[in-house]
Image (cartoon, rainbow, N blue to C red; front, top):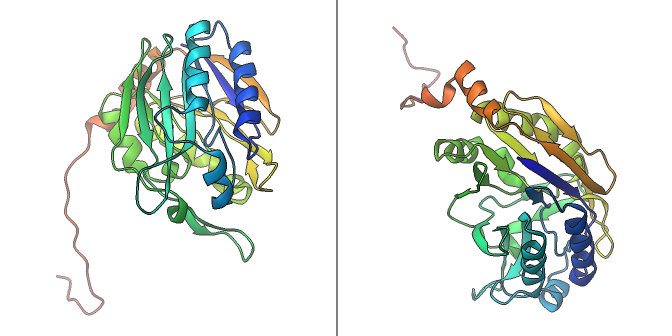
Length: 280
């Protein structure tokens, strides 16, 4: 499977970001799949601005333009995620990953399940659930090369989700992200390698990087491709651009044959002991 992985610095202006994505798609012509980061269409923490510039999923011009270019280039696109308006009374958005095939058709989508509600420091706080409605269903999509499991950014910290995707047939996991710099420096590489090792999957994590115009938010970069044995195949560093790799999907079967942990799950209970309990 010939893959291209994009590392970009999206602004809070969807039209600017679309021009960047279409240029990268042209550069990815001849590859099998292009992987894009989280919130490719708009990086913003300003709800009023988002309401002004974003669109609903149905009839979304940003997505439609990418679908049309995918059709012309005969290129699959893992549109890492886009922020879209929803019909909910609370006005929250969806953080939605979209899979587009080489005919320009949407063949799957996934809404981010786990919300990034954290306090990293006195000056850096995120409460994603205030602005985004969490999804409720995991997703695996069949491609001509392998089944591919979808997750987004903060989902990375929840091993059970990725194990469920592997049990459902995924051999490749897509983890598009806009990781904060502080958590990225501490956890990004080790979490992605852990998810690959636990599942015996290739993990492809296209990431946002740098300081984002309009919001001032800073993201970690280091888009990664990790092999099913846990080795880092590609690390994009901090620079924007497109990177390429050819994946031997036979490595998934070989890794799983060496350590067949996906076949060794066992049900178990849990007993909580109190300090005054007498243990015989």
